[in-house]
Length: 445
Image (cartoon, rainbow, N blue to C red; front, side):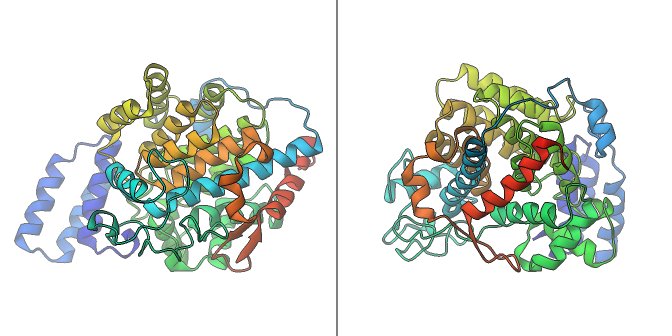
């Protein structure tokens, strides 16, 4: 994990991150390899790391990390969309978002980190491919899907993430952050800062159950750093998917208010991420806010994209995906294009996984099952992508429209590792979320 990486590994990761930003890294990579070949001491890698940190990306893109600059660089968009919600409709949509996120996350959880080929094999050996249900137990799974590098430790019938043993949405960090996002808005209010969110992490999250950029930021908090330094100091994961998976609660409480949803998402993301890592969370939060007021998938995406700078790598990826999905008859054609252009990024990168989510949404044509299954079959960070696609479609469709086979096994229950929130009723979380959303609609907060 990056937060425990020695300086040699950290230097390698930072070179990769700088390369993805567009920096010229051939010289420092050559120096790195020479140090490795020579068996150089840590202090030599320290010097090289300092050199790598000074690399500057070309001006091809404009990717600021502060809110004012982000807003100045974004395209025109509807910052607020008026809609009258009945009490029942608003609750149904919020509950649908919680349920949809849970179902999509649970579907992708057994195959997190697997390749598309491994996912296909696991599905064929359990409940069938293309996916039309949760993964099921597999008797004597082959080595290709029993590897400890991804997926569950076993594919036996007692695994709580597999069909037949599911009794709740099993604990997952994707869902932990949604609960914590709701909690901070209840406890601190909607004017919370990145530092406020950092305090919530320290109070509620066990250190060894946060990952990648979040783990780095957590370590930096404990060592006395404050945002935005928590996001930048020795953090080669600053553009990974971690912030993007934390967006949902901020969209849920801002139905029809994409600008406000994106602003809250920024306050959360700036604790641990920079540039496209921040934009990913803002984009998703704004899409969720838009999903409450339109069922046009392309319009939801356009509204989400209007809250991030237009001259960025993520914005370029969004344009690519919309264009490709319009042309392609199937998601299998689109995934080839995504893999060709973006497949060299880190597997947990914001941009790659945002592309998978968009592929699922656009090829779903608004069908919940198609949306989450395509997002998972596409590979990369499957639980994250299934969850995000499910959240957006759940908000758009509402709980009553979600297929029973996806929501009934959850038993209205969400498990969490967060201190004070171990077992939660999804319906109660929805009621608490609605209380804040109703105030936002009235303009009370």
